[in-house]
Image 1 (cartoon, rainbow, N blue to C red):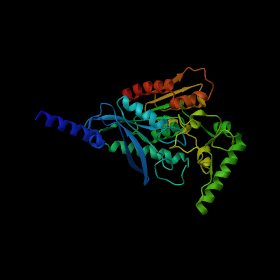
Image 2 (image 1 turned 180 degrees about the horizontal axis):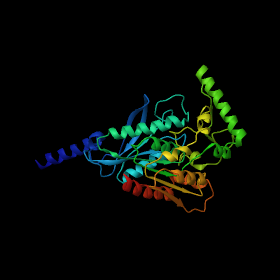
Image 3 (image 1 turned 90 degrees about the vertical axis):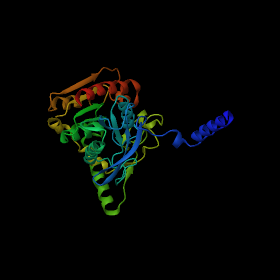
Image 4 (image 1 turned 60 degrees about the horizontal axis):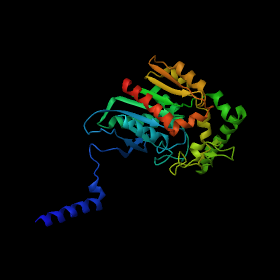
Length: 334
C-alpha cells in the first residue's frame, strides 16, 4: 500500500511537470501581466496590462497609463516603467499606439501626435472598464515625446486625475528648428512629408526613411544614440530601426503642445534636468500649467544635454528615482 501511494505521488508530480498549464495556473493572486486589446477610433490597440504583486480579484486599485518616446513600442521604456509601477501597487497599461507594434493602423510607422493623444484617452476608457480599477484613480505617466501626448490628453480629459512626466520633450515652432536644420530644414521636411502624403493617397505607397542612423543625416534620428542602437537596450526586435514614414514630418514638426498648459488642471509632477532635452521648455510649460497643484523636480547632473535624456529610458539610477517620485505623487493625488 505504501509503495502504491509513493508511485501515485511520483505520477502526480510527473504529470504536473509535463503539463505546465496545469502546474502553473494564473490565479487571482499570482497574476503579473497579460496581453489585452481595446479599440481606439475603430482600430484594435494591443497592450500589456500589469498587475500589482498583491493583486486580488474584486479589490480596487489605482491605475496608470504609461507612454514612451516617439516611434517606440510597448516593449521599450513604456513597458519597463509600467512593470515597475505595478510593483508599487498600481494596475498599469503599456500599449502600442496605432500604426506601431502589434496594434492596427495604416500607414505603418506614421508618427501622428493627434492620433496618439486620442489613443491615450481611449486607453483611459479601457482601464475604466476593468472592474478592479477605481475610475476616480486613473493617472498617466510618460517619458520624452510621450510627455507631449500625455499632457495634451490630460488637458482635455478630466478622467486623468494626475500626471507625471520624466525627461519630457516639449517643443514649439522655434524649438524644432534647433534639431532639424533651422527654418529651411524644417520647411524642407514638411514639404517632403506633404508630397509623401499625396503619393500615399494616390498610389497607396508609403515612403520610409531610417528611424535612426549614425551615417545618414536624413534619418529621423541621426547620431550615436546608444539606447536605440543597442539591442541590449532599446534596439529590440519588436521596434523598427529602419522605418519612419516620411509623411510623419509634417505632423511632428508642426506640433506645439505649449498652449495646452493653461488648460491642464490635473495635479502634475515634471521630472527633468539640464542634462535632458530642451530644459527651458519644460520650465516654460510648467510655469503655465493652470493648476497650483504642481511640482517641478529638477535633477542635478554633470551630463550635458541631451545625454541624461536617454538614461531616463532604462538606466537604473534615473528610472528608480523617477519611479520613487512618481509613485509618491500618484499615491498622494489619486
